[in-house]
Image (tube, rainbow, N blue to C red; front, side, top):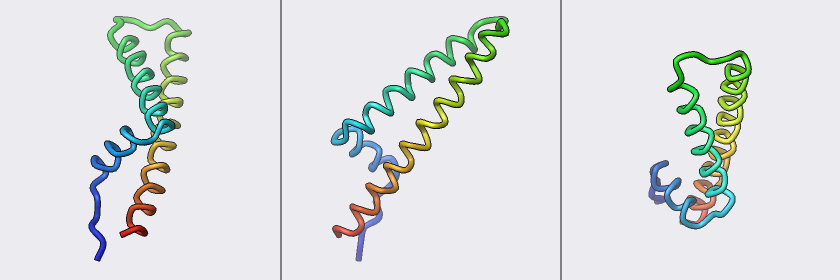
Amino acid sequence: MSVLIGEAELKEQLLNTNEDYRRLAAEHQSYSDQLEALNNRPHLSEDEKMEEILLKKKKLLLKDQMYVMIQKYRKTMESES
């Protein structure tokens, strides 16, 4: 019988062992930081609003890529047990 591993544990394992996942996570955090900086401004210019939209899309794309990696890693872990 296989033991199910939680998503948090899988993320932690990937952060510790997978350079690609670590790079994606760092990039995702960078976009989060940039979005936070924009959100702390009282008013955004039109360019800043466009930058905000672009950052959100990039961040979501990275999140999707990280999710795919987690799912592949989960399948690998489950097939080995």
